[in-house]
Length: 390
Ligand SMILES: Nc1ncnc2c1ncn2[C@@H]1O[C@H](COP(=O)(O)OP(=O)(O)OP(=O)(O)O)[C@@H](O)[C@H]1O
Ligand SMILES: [Mg+2]
Image (cartoon, rainbow, N blue to C red):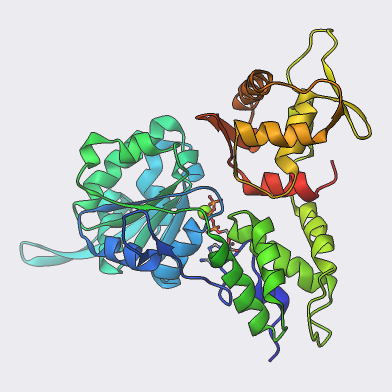
């Protein structure tokens, strides 16, 4: 039976047909992430902590290594009230929250059927997990309320000693404290850091997928899609799916992928993302309190420094990190006449933008200014900046 594009390229689900196995390099040797996770789960008494940027394949990795039948997934966001930690986990594993059990007991000469009520509690959940080889995946741990994080860590510490298997997933910098910096857990952690994707790893997704669909695609095009995907396997999956949709790949017998479809596919893909307001907030910059902001002359008019910075981030080649020199060069390239902003002005403006985004919701936290370099934290934001209409 012919595979459908939507089953091959799966930007928001487990990619069965386009799964790419990657090698981790952060420990000085090249070793598959799957092998590391499998090994970590074998060490009894240890808690596995997976940390990595958003949408880099943390959940997918767990789903690959722990088969569906043994996987019990809960999210940090499920724990609004720390009191019911074990009840929530037990319920996810399919255990009844409360009930009755009957036991025959000998009373003197008589045997009696005794029925007791029970509430689901920690010991029973741990015993059930061990008996059925279940593995707890506690996803998005950072989204659990801060005061419950420590409590959960404490509960897990006790449970892993009793052979309870658990993986805790979180974003970098966010949950280090409760798990990775928890003195009680030192020596009891298996650490796995998920790195951003390399170009060749992203390319593999397209190669695998188009081959399964029987559509020939030029290597040059694969590379262009990977460059635009900016370290994100999810973007790679989205763009490939957009290409298939635009070319009606499920209905037609395609002999090749035409180069012109790429830009349309990039733009088409941005409809899945909503950063219009983020871009506006950044371009507006801090409040001017009624004062005129300095304007710079560009090809089609005048713009202020904040707009220049955003435009500079967006141009070719897409980069996830830009030094102040690179930024200055990019900004200068827009200015057609008159003065150019100096590095200090650029630095100050970025610092102000940083303050603005620090105070807002997570979606606004798209970059970080550190060590004289502007780091893009969210590849999808940069993709939107390049191809979206804003
Ligand atoms: N190994 C892989 N091979 C191919 N595609 C992948 C792989 N890992 C992830 N992807 C793609 O990226 C998408 C996002 O992956 P996943 O949901 O695992 O990220 P995550 O790190 O758990 O993100 P979040 O931090 O939002 O929970 C997947 O739905 C899939 O399309
Ligand atoms: Mg996830």
